[in-house]
Image (tube, rainbow, N blue to C red; front, top):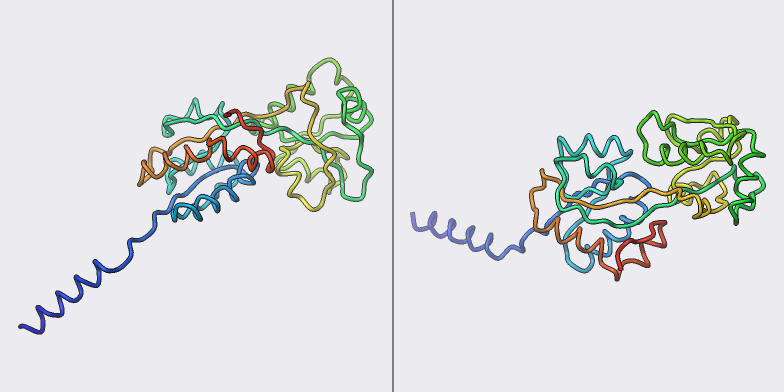
Length: 244
């Protein structure tokens, strides 16, 4: 009996002596925002000990995943956040601009001014972008821009999925897509961002998933994402911060 009590006591002491398991946060975000989130998550883990994993896939998959989980923090276009009852504590982050790319072996057009950008699109045999009918924020922004009178004559190539797939298939020779996605694609050459005069960008925000298992930790990470100290890192990965 004494031996059993002693064994139970030792087991209890071992549990008390064991280090507490580090908190883990699951962050859902589309690829365009994940580019900046990955290094920020690693930086946050290094400074706090809280493990942060970033995933999600497409915008639609992120929204679907919020219903079933697991999820603690979500980063999505701000326009989506307003319609999501299962996200709270929305914090504006910044704008991700649309960029222009061509095939890796093609000549990169000069799009440094609105006039040169417009000329490049008019000269293209096809301009690919995400089909707005699929509900993508970037696709809707690009389609609205190309519907303006000054782009009359541009050959639209709506694509199901990523615009760059139309470059590989030969259906288009210019792709308009979110800048961080293009910058990470080794099969294309990036000409640069769409000139700011056209406002071709999507505003993003972070929020707390209502299904989170640790709302305090989730809030701490959202606050970290909007910390002005991290503005330079966000810019490096294609998001222009709205916070100062």
